[in-house]
Length: 115
Image 1 (cartoon, rainbow, N blue to C red):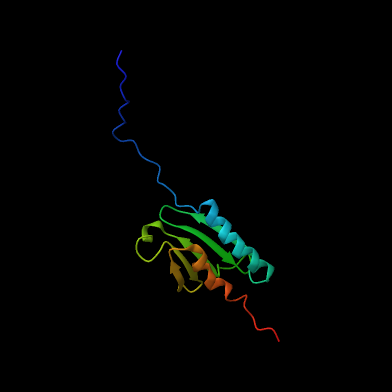
Image 2: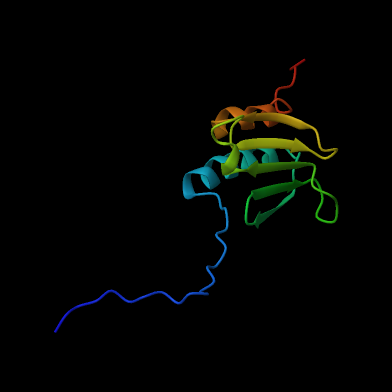
């Protein structure tokens, strides 16, 4: 008896792979989110996992457009960096290879002068 590997079906469709944040990335994002909620700046969030991008959207109120989007695009990892923070008007505030350094642009709102 010979053991043969099964032949794949010729028209077998592969399920498209979805991009997602891993556990470490979610921890970093939620750490920043928690500090901003405690400061009263943010109130709600949403996550979307698509074929080419993972998006963490931040809302000031639940029924608004997101004020910031944190995006992960692995196709850009060898170019500008796979992480980006995008403002409500579509401006890219920061893009880079390290998520912690990219999220620092959001923490500038927490720095306030003490009288």
